[in-house]
Length: 217
Image 1: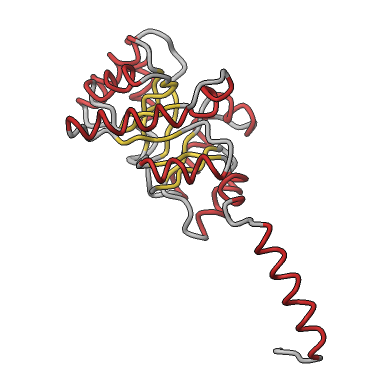
Image 2 (image 1 turned 180 degrees about the vertical axis):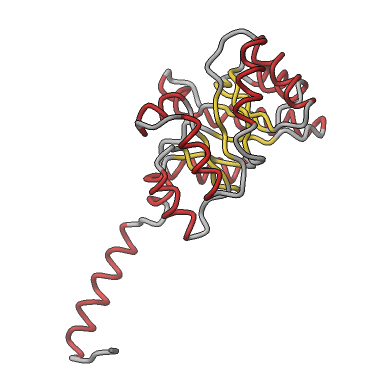
């Protein structure tokens, strides 16, 4: 499974990239706001660090405007995936931009029917939002499973990019279900290394080592 980092924080991306943990990056208007930087400037810098897909989101609401914004974003670097919302205008935009050879990430997906439409429109990625479904007492992981089944039934090439990842268990369960990609904040990716028994075992090893009175260096 691929790891995309859901942030526009260049320092956090560099840290995880150096460890080989970054297959791509996703951004959105909220993350651009949090970065405090110009969208073109920060996206260009991210693309210079990461060779995999970097999602940059349009902010227009009509197809014609989305297409124009998408072309401008795609011109930033060859690895840009233009991110569009799962609306009818977003699907129109996806069809046009994917037909022009650009990667397209269709975002804000909350149903299997929406995911089916995105695949038919030529989406490179579909982004179902797990955590936001959990927030309204629906199981976001069920949606990942439904999309996986539908895409496999018809051999759709659209990759399932599980988004709104909140916990380490979300990552594990998405991997078990067969999501192609998860996009998660840096803290969640780093948290995958944590386990209480690892900490407990290391603490005991350090105590026992101190009793030996030895040094390695």
